[in-house]
Length: 203
Figure 1 (cartoon, helix red, strand yellow):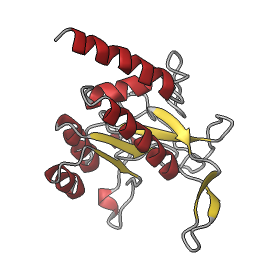
Figure 2: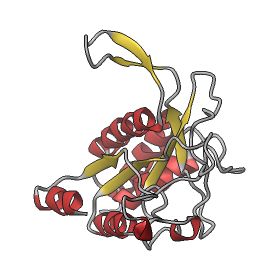
Figure 3: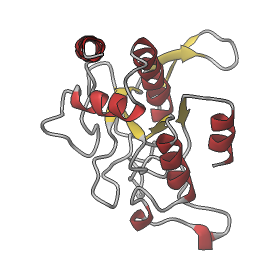
Figure 4: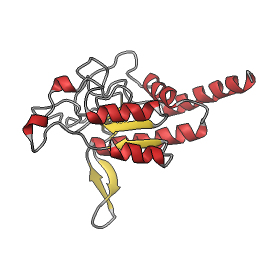
């Protein structure tokens, strides 16, 4: 929450979060699945408020798909946040990618991006290595999202999110692993070009 406030004060337009909370040193603060309702935890409320202020917020779905707690964790549950699951190069959902929906029944994750066997820079040598995690999928989508919004600044943050959902390859049949699926950024860009032309024509 403090980071979101700081980002807003600096004029940040987009942020992505690759952490989630379910358990704490003091177990009295632990979350249950019921808490993952999109607007109860401090992180979810802060993220939703940031979106209301015009920020585009993304979150990694989490890597608990193979664990006893296999659900998305907060802030991935937040109702206004674009939550990203992980797939591999063959468009298959990664087994570790956390499950939705949130406990309020909202489709989560919203969409998916490459997060399994992703080529990244190694932390020790900087040389290419393979990595796994929704923490790779979320920044990839944040970059794509930022490029889209930079190209079409007249489109609101919430419309960018909805556009990415609607361009997903599972939009007509969303599931609890990849949500609305892998977005088609090219078709979405073409749609925004038409929308922007219409907006300009009407002024």
